[in-house]
Each structure stands twice: as structure tokens, then as C-alpha cells.
Length: 227
Image (cartoon, rainbow, N blue to C red; front, top):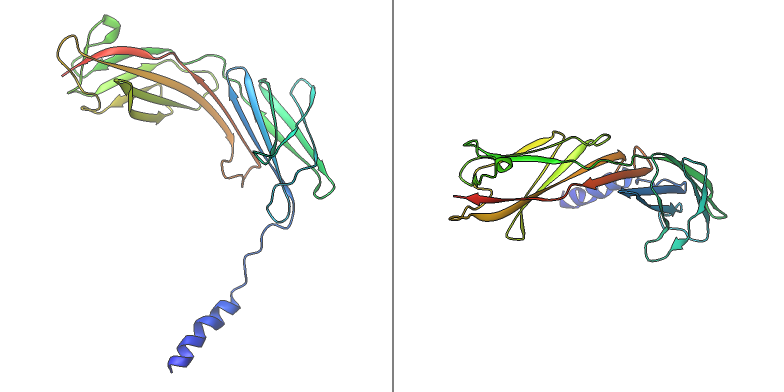
């Protein structure tokens, strides 16, 4: 009986078909835009999943200008830094091992950074009124919208240390009471920064063979925190 129990899992394993990888070569494109610069990385994968070099890689920007993408062995990708232009970038890769492959990558250039409007505590104290905010109450941070952005990252620092981050699709965020530490007059220094971002594609490169992201940060806003 024990021998039969040992054999049964082996038989079940033998009956389970192995997962076969995608036998076709494929291309993955990462486009990262900050302000007026576009960093482009194109990875050509063979049927075994390994990066291939030696291909002719090119990208045509939305205005029709054609640029060659040199291979960077340190990144295992064809890379270039180009002026950022909103629109569709057409990537082509031609290799004797993988054939000709292409991808269209949309790029959104954010042109107006969010503007930090105010930091206000639960007592109604506002830094725009040159007031100090209380660490013992929730603190609301507000900013203006950035056209084309789909989310915002709020970073909160105190005494040079990052103490909180909030990701939201809104133009405001509330920090729970106690997030910051207050001090006696004149208060403890703190600051907030907001970064707008827009993202298209798939970070896992499954539903889309590209990931396109753009970010633009506002200047930090400093203030004083009391208990």
C-alpha cells in the first residue's frame, strides 16, 4: 500500500503537461519621460527568453524623425535619450535570429507641474496664512491638477527624513494625526513635494508590450509644525 501511495504522485505529475514558454521572439519597450527628456529602452527577447544583440533597432518619433538605437550590453537593451514629444513612437527591430518586430508606444509629456496650494490642520491653521500647523490633528495638503496626469505622489519630509508617502488620483491628501512631530516655538521644520505622473501600457508587459510613464514634480513647500 505504501508503495502504491508513493507511485501515485509520480503518475499524476507525469500526466500534468509542462508549461511551454512562448516560442516566438518578442520585443519589450520602456519609455520614461521626465520634463523634456525621453529615455527609451528596447529589449529583444529570443524564443528562449534571452536578450538578443546585433539587431538593427530604430525609432520614429511623432514628427517622423528616425533615430538608431545602439545596444547597451550593461542593460541588455537598445537605448537612446531623445527630446520628449507627445504622440506615438514607432519602434522597429530587425534581427536575423528573431526577424522583424515592431511596437507603437504612446508618450504623454506633462508640461505643467502641480502647484502646492496649502497645508492646513484640523484646527483651521493654514500655512498660506503664515500659520504653524498642529501635529496632533489630521493635516490636509492640496495642490492644482496637472493636465494629462492620472495620479500624484505626495512625499512628506521632516528634518531631512522621508516620513510618509501617499499615492492618489485626487488633488489633495490627508495625513493622519501624528504623522509629523511638533516642537515648541518656532516649531519643527517639515516639507511636502508632489509629483504628477501619467502611465500607459503594462508594467508586466503582458497585455501590452510596452510601459510608458511620464513624471513632473513641483518645488517642495516648507512649513513649521507645533505639537
